[in-house]
Image (cartoon, rainbow, N blue to C red; front, side, top):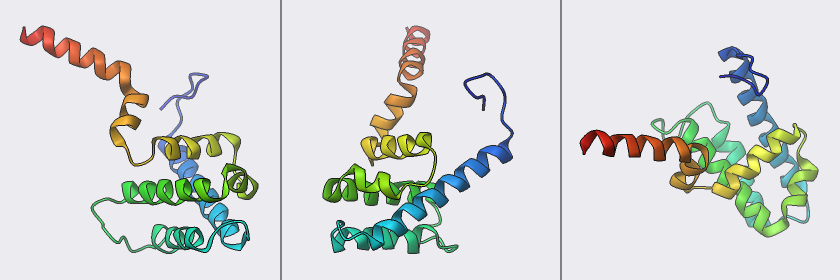
Length: 136
C-alpha cells in the first residue's frame, strides 16, 4: 500500500496502524462506559464490544475482522445517535485521521455495497463496462 506521498509502507507498519486503531476504539469505549451522558443500553453495546471484540476467542471465527468492524460500527452508530459525536470525540485519544475513519465506517455502517461503491465506485463501473464490451 502506498501513502499519499507515494512511499510504500511495509505490511508490518499497516498491521501496527490497525492495532493502534483498535486500541484507540477500545479506549474510547472505555471512556464511554464512565460517561454519564451515555444511556445505559448504549454503554452495554460498548461493553459488548470490549468483551467480545477484543476477546482472543472469536464468537464466529469465519468473520474475524469483519465481525469486529460490524460490532464497532453498530456500537459507535448507536452512541452517536444517543449521545452525539462530540461525546465520542471527547473520549477519542487517537489521530484525527483515525476518528475520521471511524466516522466513515459509522456513516456507511453495515451497508457493504454503499461502502464498496464509495471506495471502489469508479473502478467497479469501469470493470463492468469493460466486461460488457468483451461480451458484446
